[in-house]
Length: 236
Length: 353
Image (tube, rainbow over all chains, first blue to last red; front, side, top):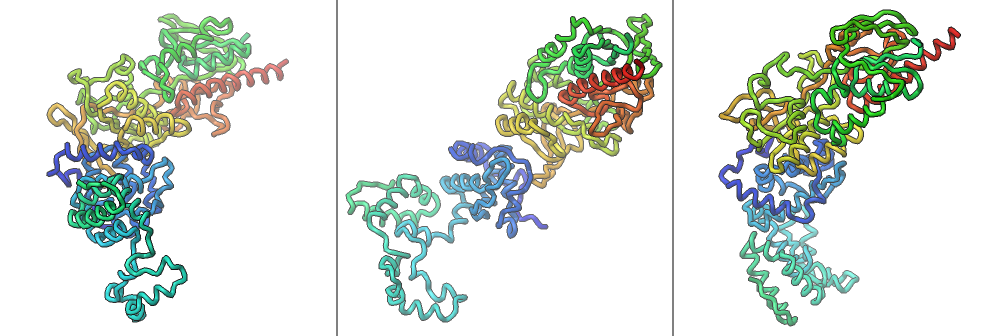
């Protein structure tokens, strides 16, 4: 097998050790860390159960082992080059030591995003539209996203549906599904709560690190709605 | 009475426990020790703390020895070396030398508990440079330092920043002829790594291994503890050689987990040397005509169901003279040997009565 993942110790020799250590300390100080990382036997049960490992040079075992060893250089490499191959399905939550490689990866990804690592930007690049949709409307996929040219594999039938989208949607019995721009009708109060959650939990800060354009658009949408609802929230 | 006397050769944990068993069950025990004190290898090699419970070795040994020291049924012969033996079950005569004086000991049964010696890391190969580099030491050298409450680089007395263990030195090696696992070294290395981290919290400690063999409670009590609480780095891969780099040691190996060759600098390298039969064990096998296995350990004849009987009726063997053994094994076998020896003599008495 050809290895795509370069684990050599000097892969990111240009990044100062202190910077890698700072990022590692951010992972380690996450309150989940001691509950998702114990020690690693190298047994490979996580890799055996991992769907991504079937298709990519990706190994939750290597991630758990690097974390257990507190290998600062290698964790930096993995945070850049590997954690994005995980599908976050948590099939690996069967470790006899109680590790959760998937959740170790969750923490590592969050650190990568919070610190605006290039790899995080690249990994999330294709998701801008979905992030915008879910964060601004609270629903992920809306009927009007189903453009015929976007889904050629769906066949001619999709043309017919997209031409009369509103009619098709109105044919659905629940009134809350009579929407085209959102997956379902989202209550105003729900939206306000969502925006407050994105703001208060630091999600907006993460978005700012990753995609400033997207951040600015979201801020516009959110500030206006929050102000109308009587909340005095300022995004910095 | 000869048929109610058991001679025990070797005053280590197995021999002490055997003597205690014999005495407390009502026969006479003659405990023969070549040194001037009891305790065996843990005492002689100045072990710091015992594996797996990290108890202070001297405290634990005193506890083990105390019941036999003034026991009316126990006679301890210090400074005594057995040189010859004759007789059979019920009537053995052991000849020996005690401080230059010839002695003769009569016993109905004999328990051999002459133990092991540590593998000499310079015996076959110098790849790890044990006799070349001051900072390449063995588990026993490390124990000695730890028992004095310190851990430093022998070359300059400085506190080390990076220490590694190399496992299976002298064990599990067809080339050396020692194909067996020495059973205790994984536990002892892990135990020492904890002790080193306790003394020097910011020291990086690595254990290079083939398999970690931490059976039973050693698993969670030492292995997990070292890895999880003390962040000891367990790296699957055995070093191929050690070379000097400035005043450091460069350890070359493979980090198999991360599928890459590895060259790491260390301040101290500890070789996890395994067990071989002691000279005394080989000598007793010869004197009593006991079968030895290909490695020189005394062969017991009952497989897993009888770990102390030998090919010679009335002669039993206990502890590390029969193969790699930890303290639990040795003490258990010592007690069993006492029971088997007395049972053999009781049966003999019943037949002759």
